[in-house]
Length: 228
Image 1: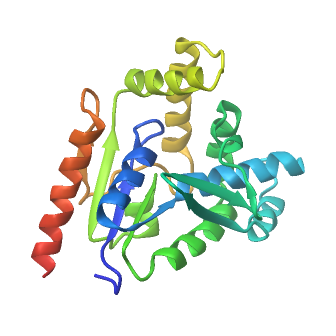
Image 2 (image 1 turned 90 degrees about the vertical axis):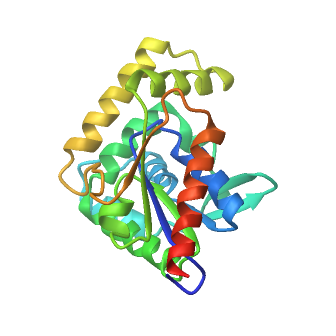
């Protein structure tokens, strides 16, 4: 266990509720939430703004090194800043979601983000969520969860989010996007989506946020008791 507490890894596919659960778990435990998915989304947004192709790994890597990505909490909300600019809304569009999977598959980008993530979490007392936290970023994390749900359920959740934002994408297209994103994440060459062998599986289909959160808190508390 690190000086500030445990390192907790939450992995899983897109739309499984990782960001919401991680934020709430961090609040309960008083830990820092490092949203790795938002970091990759921010790089994808920066690449689109700069007109850099996802196939141009060298330029993507250079861009990534020049991105100052930080997290700032305002009340109950956590904002994502790119070089001081709040991009929290822009990085959550369907276009950026699909672009992120391609950008994050580039080794140079992953190496750059990996270094930043490890620096952020090295002292413990952190919760990181993504697709390769328990397998690549922190393979020795003291607690690992793999949070999932059916593609239909994840698509439905995403559809409701988009509706709330005024987006007009259909439920069928939203589910198709989820399935396509899963395939991209599972088949990419570098750090594909994988469940760590020692991760605790949680299928959130049919579960409330509170039920998932209570299960995770109990697991973490049991680990803290065990480590003394």
